[in-house]
Length: 413
Image (cartoon, rainbow, N blue to C red):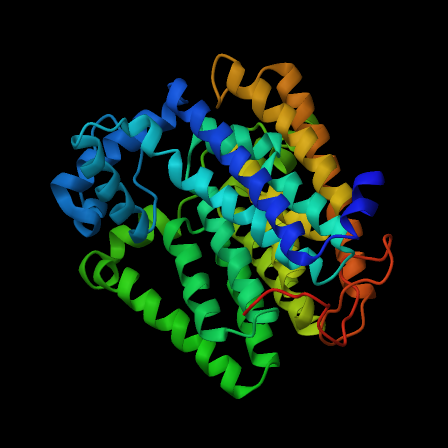
């Protein structure tokens, strides 16, 4: 590709600047959408949650019924975020815009983060394209700029934890980022075993510092709720099943194939915990085999969680969007386009939780694209030699090529 080859002649500062500009344009685009659209029902639900948090507090909210609102299933840090956003809204700022700001900012950070991850494992041109791909990803623009849930924030922290641990050799900061990821939304819990395994593979000093960072932040954020309302926290957050719609993935296919109702009920009930365990175990296994490829392992684990998810939600498509670009540019581009079209048409329909037949078919196509991308991405991870990642010497080299020395013009620590 001409653009990719042209990027190879740039120094890393210029390449990073190009990604920053693309990320800034993406952020402005998301914020324009947020400021000029009402958003889906979740925007109004979050506004209700924010009012309730103001009344009951970020800890006690778990034990109070919220008439007219769904179950409050967000981890403790989300409550503090809503408290702050509600305070800003009382100063005259639009809550509908504010609630979509964290996800939009997270996408900005993710674009730069993906560039930094990929440039250590591939040609610089590929890294630039991957960073730009995240910035302009249709699925991320739709889910962050229009929907505005907290999924993108959690994913950004999870990828940051992997990058800090594997590439920046900052286990303490990595532990803090890992704890932050599950404190915003509990979804990244599937990558925590992989992160701990990679830390253990780094030796005792690394594992101790990672555990210290994770434990300190976890105790600070989760401690008050665990001590005060442990049962309600467990029921609302830890055991949340994700609804009973049959719009995506395995549950959708089971419904189309006419499998017994008991099978589908089990999949959406206790069975979904088995899928979570499979994802966590797969991530831990990959991290043990290839700890230097931890960002790719985290990306693959989050993608696998979406692939096996028995829950349906357009915002869930965020889980794999940035990560597929870590696995490969083609994988990221294919998924962003397929899932992006699904999200855009889904949000344009009558309801984001009642997909039309064309959206259901696009969702099935997106699922297949994701599955194919995970297969090729995991094969690349396993094809590398154990050790420190290095920059790929050729344009078409795998994104997860092993590395023996720092590339010239590397980022400042």
